[in-house]
Every structure is written in C-alpha cells, then in structure tokens.
Amino acid sequence: MQALAFIFAAATTVTQPLSTGTDKFNIQFSPRTPEQIASFYIARGFPEDVVNILKQQCFITIRIHNTGTEKLWLNLANWKFTANGKPLHRDHRDVWKQRWSDMGLPLRFQSTFRWTLLPESLDYVPQEEEGGNIILPRVKGPISLQASFITGNNKQGPVINIEYDKLYCAEDPQ
Image (cartoon, rainbow, N blue to C red; front, side, top):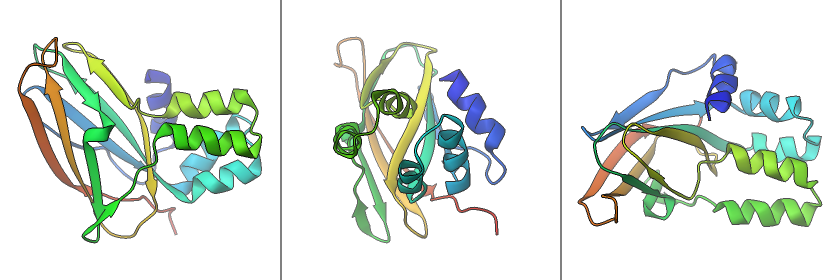
C-alpha cells in the first residue's frame, strides 16, 4: 500500500487528502483525477481501451489507520454512498474481474488492477494502516458516505458508524 500511496501522491496536483474518523481510527480520502488514473495505468502498460474505461470512473484512494487498541473490521458491504439524494452503486471487485475477463484482459493487468483496490473486507490490528481505491460511477457534486465498522477480536465489540459528506469525483485541471 505504501508504494501505491507514493505513486498516487506523486501524481497529486489537484487535492489534499480529506479525512474523518473517531478516537479509534482515521480515514483519509484522496479523490483522483482521470488524468492521474490514466497516468498510473498507462505507466503499467494497460491497453488504451481499458484506460479509457477507467478514466470514466470516479476513483477515491482510501487509507484507514486503526489508532485504537482493538481490532477494527472493514466490510465494504457496510458502506453506502449517495449523490444528489440517490444511492450511488459501487461495483464489487468481482464485477470488475468479470468485466476484465470478458474483455480478454491479460491476467497480469487484472492482478495489478485488483492490487490497487481497497479490499472488500479486512481486519485492522491496532496501529495497522492499509488502503486502496474504491471506484464509483462518476457524478457531479458531493458524495456522501455512511459506513459501519465492527470492533473487537471476535467482531463482538461495538459498531462504529460514521457519516461523511465531503467526497467528490476529482476533475482534470482545466
């Protein structure tokens, strides 16, 4: 993840990371422009038709840091996005896998793409920090997130709910 963060941080010219959290964890959000996404995947030799598909999406790099003393459980099924008062559907990584397979995208590119995504579920031990990209349909205006995290070694701790309404799809500089 550190390499991914470095690569994307080096390309960041438009935004500073946004963040939210609690006394138990911190989340940073870094919206990526289509140009940044294209540069990243072109540099890895991705075919032009795939890069064009990815440039049309809304990429947000997310870094989660467990600052608490208990295990924190990420499950993206417990994250709900809305834009303009309507649900904003995030495709599961399996949808992307099937799309790339149907297009005949070589496995080396599928693997690289999958590596850049935020895992669908992950446990964060105290002080652990991990992240990756989420991909949403590109929309204008603010995006809101409602997310729940379970805590505790056996998922028996309290549920932490957050709401964040400062997300957006980054645009290329004009």
